[in-house]
Each structure stands twice: as C-alpha cells, then as structure tokens.
Length: 448
Picture (spheres, rainbow, N blue to C red):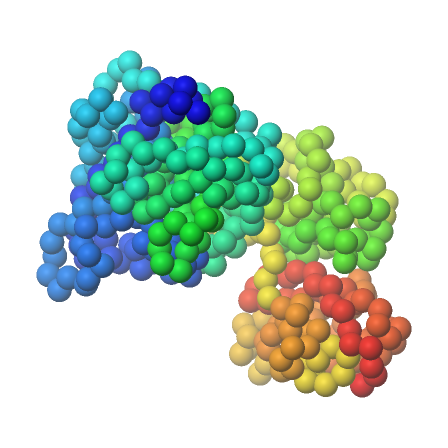
C-alpha cells in the first residue's frame, strides 16, 4: 500500500473554486435537491452554510485527478459548478489557474485543464473487474485542509443503483466503499491495489454529512468515456433508447419465462423512439448488448449512456421465453427526452392486495397528468402495511396489466385479481409519474 500511495499521490490535486455566493446557492439548491443525506455537505464551502443577503465571494474545496501529462484533470461536476475562478494545487505545492473544459451534468463529471506539461498522470483501471472485498484506496483533500490524504478500505458493493431522485435517467453503477471519504474528497481518486484509477469519489451517505462507512464512486468505465468526450468536444453526447427498465428478479422471472434472474425488463417504450423504431416491445427482456451479458437494468443504462448517438447496436432479447435478435440505432439524449431509465419507481384499502382502485376518468386523468392513450385502473388508496404498499404502489398510480394481461378498467382489475389463486404472486405493470415499471406483489392469503 505504501508503494501504491507513493505512485498515485502525485497525480491527485486539490481544487479550490471561487464563486458568487448568491449564484452558488442557487446552483446548489437546484442540483442538491433530493440527493442522499449528507451529499449537500460533501462539497465543502467556506461560507459556513449561512445564507448571505448580499453578493460576496465564496470558496469551495474539492479534489481532482490528473489523467494526461499535458494538464487535463477530471473531477466532479458539482465541484466546479458555478465557478468564476478555479485554482489547482499540485502535489509539489504549485498553485496553478485552471480552465474549465466542460461539465456533464448527467454523470456529474467535469474536466479542467492547467497550462503545463510533464505532469504525473494516473493509470486507468478496469472497474468492470471490481468485486466486493477487494482492497481500494481513496485519495483527496478531506475538509479542504488535509490535502493529499489517503484512506484504505474495501469494495463494499458494485453496481449500486442511481441514488439521485431529481432525474431517474442519470446512470447508476456506483462503486460502494468503506474507505473513509469526507467533504472535500469529492472528485478524488479511488484506486485498486495496483494503483489504477477505478473510480471518482462523488458522494457519501451520512446523517451528519461526514464519513459513516458508506462512500460512493463513479466507476472508471463511465469516467473515462465521459472525460475523453469532454477533452475532445467540450461536451458529452449520450445515446438513448427511449425505454424504462426493471431488473429480472427471482420474484418476477417466472412471469417472463426466464430460467435465471438476469436481464433488463422493458417496462415502457416511448413512441417514436429508437427503441420503438427498432422493434423493442413492452415486456421484452434484454439479455445482451453487442454480445455482452446484461445482468440488470442498471448495467444496460450505464452501457447505453456511454455510447454516442448514431451508434448501431445489437440486442439479444427474450420475448415470451423465445430469443429475438434486434438491431437498433441509438438516438441522442436531450434534457427532456427519454433514455434507458432504470424505472424502479414506487401502487385497495381492502382485499388481498390492500388497495382501492377506480376507473381512469377524464378528471382523474387530468389530476395525475396521464396521457390520453393510457388505459387502466387508477389507485385511489393504499392500506398501510399491505402487500400493495410493500410493492411501492401509491395513490395516483395506474395499473396497466395484471400477469402480462391488459387492464382496461377498475372492474376488470378486480376480476383479474380475484381470478388468481389465493397466495399466488401477481405481476403488475404500473404507470407512475410518467414512467411504467413492473412490480411483483405478494397477496395476502384471503379473499375480498
């Protein structure tokens, strides 16, 4: 570990940012809203957290990693967001002005550049080869004061889903580690035992805002692809399919005639999207992308976000238990467009499900902003502690299918539920806030 730390430390930098206080607070409130506890404090600021009534300069601290000898440095997007001045402190204590090359808000990554040559750049690692239990080191400047610190831990988990609540389209796939990460470490390096960059430290889960044993890093697989586009074009163009996704699980695999709990279920296909034009159907299970196994919706989401618009891809799909091969061309991600979403969103007061439903009338449709073509039974109420609540159903959701069969009304839904055997699991297709997802529900063993 001593040898690894001595090799990696020269490629890690401290980043200080100056911004207008009012501008910075607006940016923070927009970007940090709905993020995990502690994340808003992850980017340490010098303003003491108090609202300023008049404009004044604020100073923020973060970390970065040198990825090329000619001065390109990767960091988090939220570290440099709203910056009017960026300064980089190198390991040899030189302080250099830096220019912002580009920010990608979808991945929360950014690239800055200092005007110098011959810098010690880090070696890229393969984050896809990480496994729980492997030793990792985290580098950065905790609290902004303890520059060029290193902490040791293990990979606690890989492929953690997207924790952001502001946009479900942001890629997941995060690396979880118990290596100590604190405010100011954001944008620093997570390396393997060979000293190779496997992730960029980005946030923590903590009630206090300081280290609590759960830190998260963006995998190098995403970092490298994003940084290379930013260095080349100053921006990133993400591919999109126009689908929402669920994971294949032991609970729902039987409903899709899958022998193992692996793959990404297409729960919604947007009209006139690359997915619809390429022949993807609701209920398809995507097993492979370009010959590579897709283990879950998050893996497909990450893979799609890395590809550029116009890329031709091949998908191996299981449709009602039968293999289908599809060739598609990815579209371009736009702010309000649909992408490959990991749609695990949250749907009779009485009966074995514990929910009450009603017909989707014009008034109900208007209240929940449901599109005209949507057909189903709208959830009116959910009994606390019921199977429906356990499945994440809530008032305003619309049930579209029961066990892969369409539901056109409340009465049809009731008949479908009562027509199933007592205690038999049900697979519901649920529309919620513009997104459709499959939910497996475990009914109570009773009638009514």
